[in-house]
Image (cartoon, helix red, strand yellow):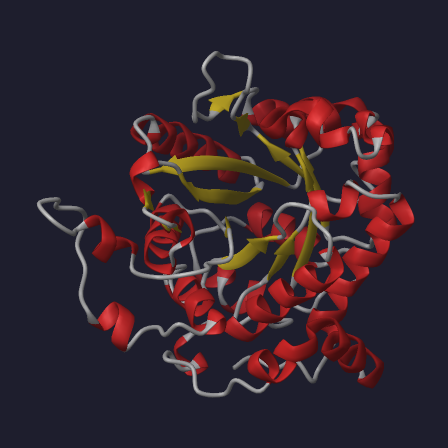
Length: 358
């Protein structure tokens, strides 16, 4: 709708033409399985997912303001563990109460609310039939001294199923010393979730001090995050959550000097991507089995220009061939009405016909 595109252009400001007029991607959209109303039938339906899993995916994609568009807008609030409750909820203490987290997702017309066993379990009888629950089954914890990067299971798949969850989510810190154990744990958990008819979402994050070189943080490199995505779909995640890439060349940087890391081909950079943010994100989509598993990018930390940054991320994700956004801190670390406004601004991008896939 025209009113959507005018608002989106205003939010993008000087970057509007750079992002909306980009029409020469390194990888053609014809190589990808793109979000659409029939995505579940045409793509997931061709896989070994059971009818129960397809029904759960149907609930996930068929709820909220983006219902049956092929796109997702999810509210994730697991920061009470991942970033500590005090640090996360001090800007808005009402979110210490789990019910307000679910209310924000409902008011924001989201496809689902993603949170912890404790948060969703506390209100499941009241809300599990009103909005799809995505239970995050593992978390980092910040009380071990010194802090460490590890993901620990906090409950069982059966427990998530009993509370009425449509999907389960998990994080793997690819590249970390604990990643082997996490891959095995999450692969087993996802197999059980699928056997019970639930969909699976994987946070494919990178964690290794070596990924920070000089003044660049290769945790956000398209090549490294793309490979993390490829590992995620290998253990049969239905949906991949990934941070938006900001640069490329992680494999090259880590292979400098006497080091030997991974494998690379220069065509990854010259033919399959460029330095344009839409191309960087498209490489992530390409690694999700050419889009057979939907890519949702995270909204990032809250700051001074949250709506503008969220809209920019949504435009990049949509034009790259992604499946949506999962934005938490930008939405809940402010008054509820402002959080709803931000979620709707994200959704406007996916409803806007003028924002096309590049």
